[in-house]
Image (cartoon, rainbow, N blue to C red):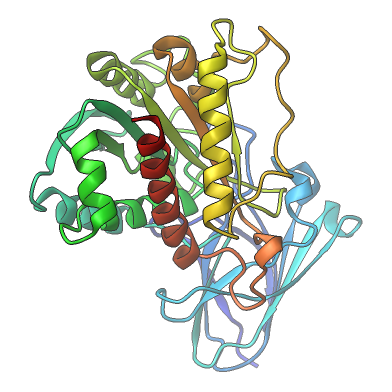
Length: 378
C-alpha cells in the first residue's frame, strides 16, 4: 500500500511530520518563531486516492489553548474553495493530547487547517479590488519586519471616524474573511446601508495587521515572536512596527468607533469584549457599547451576549490591548469581536461549523448594526 505524503511548505503552512505508515500519520504543530505559542495548523495530504486517512496531531496539551480542542473538528477542503469539517476527536491522555482526524477524500488531495486559511495572495486581491472602487483610497501605513506592506483602505466622507482592523493574531483567519464581507458591503454603491454609512462615517480599514505571522503559519505572533495585541501601550519599530504604524495613523484621524476582529479557540459562540476597567471610563462610552451589543444581538442569531470574557474591575483594564488602549486614548466606543474556531452553537452547522461564508455575513450585520447605532444617536 502506497504511503500518503504530507506537506506544509506553502503560505500559512504549519505541520511537522513525525511518522507515516500507509494512510496514517503522527504529526505535531510547529511553534511560532521565537515564541512558545502554537495551535494553528495547515497542511496538504496527497496520495490519498480516495482512501480514508487517519491523522493524529500530538502534543496538544501544551498548546496555547488546550481547551480549544474538546468539541473541535478540523477544517478540510479538496478544492481550497469550500471548507467543511472532518470527523475529529480529542484524547487528552494520548500522546500528550492528541487530535485524531479521519477523512476519506473523493480524490487524491486534501487540505486540512485549523480554520479556512486566508492567503496573502487573496489579501492582495482583496486590497486591489477594493482600492479601485469609487471613493476608496489606499495607503501603506508602514512595512512589517519581513518587509510586507501594512495596507489601509479609506472611504467615506462623514465626520464619524471608524477604524476596523483584523488579524493581529494571524491564525485567526476568520477575521479577514469578516473583512472581505465588510469591504464587499462598503464598496457596493447600490447598497443603501453602505451609502448611508459612507455619508456619516470616514472608514479606515486594515484587513490584516500581521502579514508576517499569517504567511509564516503563526497562531498569535509576528516575525519577532511578539503578540501584537499586547503592544498598544508602547509599540516600537523593533518589536511591533505594525502596531506603531496603526496607532500613529489613528492619532492623525482620531477614533470614534473601533472594532478589532479576532477568533476565539475555546468559546463556541460569537461575542464582543469591551473596555470595562479603563481609567477614564465614562457612562457615555459604556452606554454606547452596551447599546451596540444589544442592536447586534437583535439583528442576527449568529451573535449572542451570554457567553464571553470576564469583565475587568474598575481601573484594572490592560492598556496594552488595543480595545482598551483605543477607548482610553481617544474616548472611543471600542470593542473586540470574537468569532469561534468551533461553531456558533446557538445556530450550529454540522457540515461547516463556523465558516468563511458566515464570517462574511456577520460583517454585514455588524455594519448594519453600526448604522442603526449611529442613526439612533443623531
